[in-house]
Length: 440
Ligand code: ADP
Image (cartoon, rainbow, N blue to C red; front, side, top):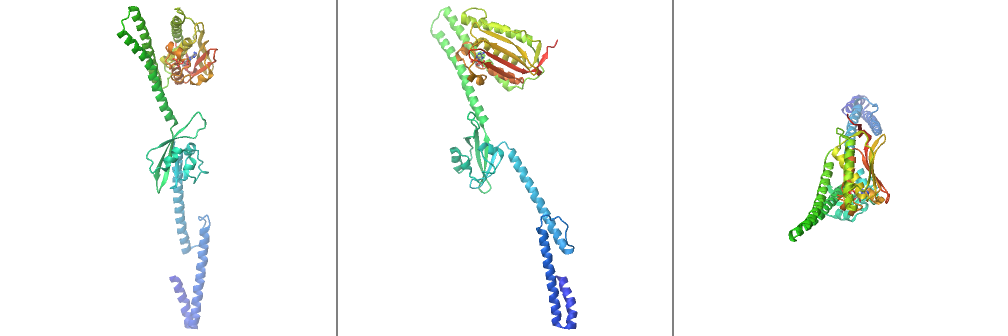
């Protein structure tokens, strides 16, 4: 501006002295107008340059205009970087929320959906794009949730039924609202199906154990009372005492099986360092099987000889890598079940089969067989098909649960094939990597 005033004076003063005041004023006016035009032109070019998308292109000026443009450019670059940093931080933040195992839904002050992560979509059946700005109560159609949403405070969580893929498997969801900002709300959702199921299983288990123990205890109590109150002869007393011993045995078996199960659940899976020689194990199983069959035959036909045709195939010369007590318990449960559930005169066939990947211990019986609807639940604790036969023969209802656990802990599985009226085959299938030649 100062330069313009000096330039005007420098030209206008000589013109004034030479040609008069009017001419000097005209020249001054002309020069000011010209400068204004140049200024307007440059400003427009600057505006044009600023309006292009790529400001990093070469500057078309020099001098003070270039300085202005450069400063603007620097300022814009700084803003761009700040915006990019903020965007990246937001993306990291959203990615972290996406990775959360809990469902997160952000609601505005009116309860309309602003954002939700994939877990919340799965839990509540929301579509992160389609359902944007929809009211949450219109989408989570559950009276319990609607009532919870309308409450003034949400200190507690609420449990609702989740959307379920299959009718058999109802999901349970826990939801809690947290207020933040200016009335916005954060809706957290958790799938608590497994927790609820575990809780229900624990309750069932305690009820089952109490029931299993109560029956022999009641019987024992009754006998004790009889012995205390009625004078009995020696023979009669003996009979009562042996009946009491049966009930005590029953409770002992139950406690032993419960301990085995809890040890299986609480310890690490079976390692590969222990070698269990099969021939010795199979001999022991065969001897126990013959003894059990004799005991049952006394009960059934009052003859102290095995009433079953027991066929034990010659044992392979292998050793199993696993835990001896667990393997023995699982195998003897399968053999004793076959003997206990096969009526007198039936047959039980025991042996080993091998493929490239698996080695399986099989027990086939000619017993009553099991209807298909029971098969999926057979290895559940205390699940019984023939309840009275199980009780009569000292069953605890835990034998197959133990066998299944042992198989899984050794990297294998329990397979059951059975047809009603045609007998059953139970197999303890173990990976071939657990079979080694017997060390000499
Ligand atoms: P339990 O102690 O009652 O025998 P298990 O867990 O060993 O309990 O077996 C569960 C149920 O499976 C038994 O009560 C019985 O009804 C059925 N079961 C098991 N093995 C056989 C078999 N070999 N033949 C027929 N039914 C069987």
